Length: 89
Image 1 (tube, rainbow, N blue to C red):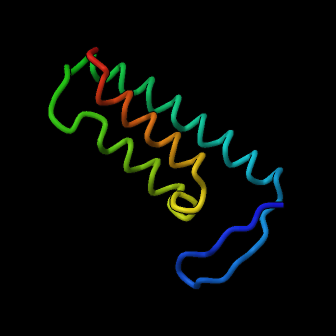
Image 2 (cartoon, rainbow, N blue to C red):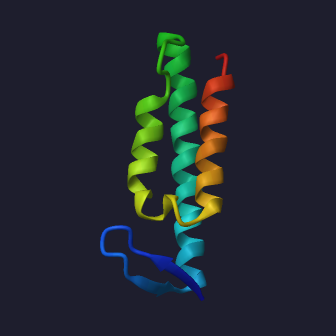
């Protein structure tokens, strides 16, 4: 079992490992989908300032309750940001 802290209430609750695994898999799918969309957008419109910012914010907002309490999720988000920053289309 993993323990999480609710950012809003400060309460601690338990989360089953299977539930985290499902969440991590779904986040990976969301990231892969966003990357495919960004590649297509770069081909269509080209690169521009703040490229990929909206997509990254969407993923970050979807998983925001777990961002600061789980280093694996933070790491995945940093990896996506690094990919966006280094992508040259």
